[in-house]
Length: 310
Image 1 (cartoon, rainbow, N blue to C red):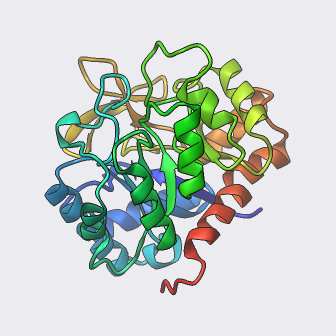
Image 2 (image 1 turned 180 degrees about the vertical axis):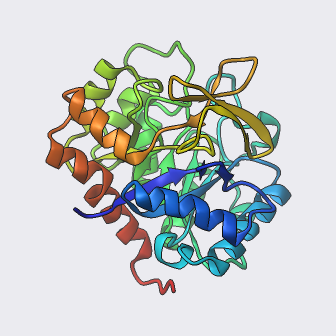
């Protein structure tokens, strides 16, 4: 079996990848637990914070990868989810709205500078001013641009794909509960063949019937399983750190902000996501394996093409 590739993982096994004090030893603990569950490669994901904090967290992560035993083989690069997201209620999710800014090439360049391993994926809201210019700039540097936490309708999504956007981040999430019936971010991204789409198959982020429909609509090769896992994944229920917040890993398999019930990443493992999508009739075993391995690996290969990462 080809190993799984997780393009969106914020932490695992009690370890927060957004911790500015992350050590190589802690990272190895998390990566070893992921590898035991079948993950061969991953993109540790840094979420929205102040630009200074995001830079500090990225560099701490980069140092930990370089100094770790498993990082050089399992972590080819990183995923930035923010800070160029939609700050409106519903769209922002658990990301701090006060640190969201409009897409800015200079800020992206600053965040990407000085790393031993590259930022390989960046999630942004395609409707924000300057998004198309940033998408073109990032795509020209081999970064996979994903749409997420976004209120983009069909016309904006089409323009983003023309500029180079290639993926939807956790499609169906990072959205308010009420949307326009047809011209909405879900339908716009589902109908765009130029976009692959990531799905969190835990039965919590997206109801099972909706997940089946979206996976079928996106089709083979473009449907990708992601975990969006936080430190609560692969760990007992309890309280865990996540990007300066505290999240509660619950017995039902969810990760939530205490006192609000709002979702904050997931406690999902990739192996469970594969089992889920098969059990729910969303894919055959071979298709589910491809959603967790071949499809994300192909997108990652696109980002790594022409790069030397050692």
